[in-house]
Image 1 (cartoon, rainbow, N blue to C red):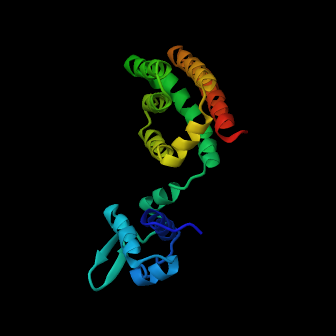
Image 2: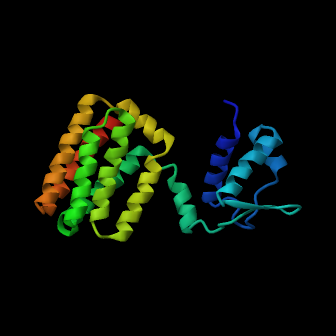
Image 3: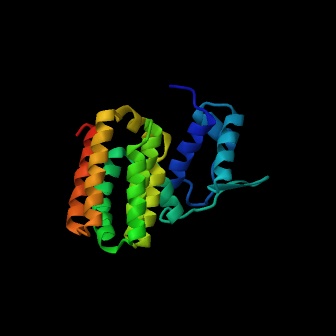
Amino acid sequence: MPKLVANDIATMLKKRISSGEWLEDGRMPPERDLAVEFGVARNTVRRAVGFLENDGTVVRHVGRGTFLTATNPTSITSMVTRMEGTSPADMMEIRQLLEPAAAAFAATNASATELNAVREAHQTACDAKDMPDFEHWDAEFHHRVFGCCRNDFLKEIHNLMRAIRNQSPWFEMKKRSFSEERRQAYCDEHQAILDCLFHRDPEGAKNAMLAHLRTVERNLLGR
């Protein structure tokens, strides 16, 4: 088994906290016990717990121990923490449920200024010189479509999905699946979505977005 480091242990502890472990009294085991459990030095566990303290997951009281700040597994904080490990397959299923609806809303509700912002993101993505720049503006295109839908709750759900997809494993997966041919296909599909938005065609926008996401799914997951 590879040697665990503080970041790995912090991630594992967060998942256990989110699952409801240690919920009854809201207190984590002592660092010395966790060090034995993980087979690492106590200083490594101390650093891991420090990461959790820095992001507000736990609070340490000298002489008393380390306590959870959110002991309710149904709290929004706990649910968001659990979402950090969302699989690519699950993410693509949710995207195919939500983003076509957002595109339909955008076709109906967007202002001319908002649509021009979507077009700007599309054009900048098409002109990008490298993969990271393209990925940034590709994501911005989708972000601006959600911004057009005039539904704040839906927009915030997308912000959460976007944060998850900005994690390192997601970027590496996109990097492996990237090619110039696929980039051109994405640009063409974005143009089809954009055309429907400017023609105020909600059904067309919905179908064009769904077709695009199915292409993304095939490229990322091999489906």
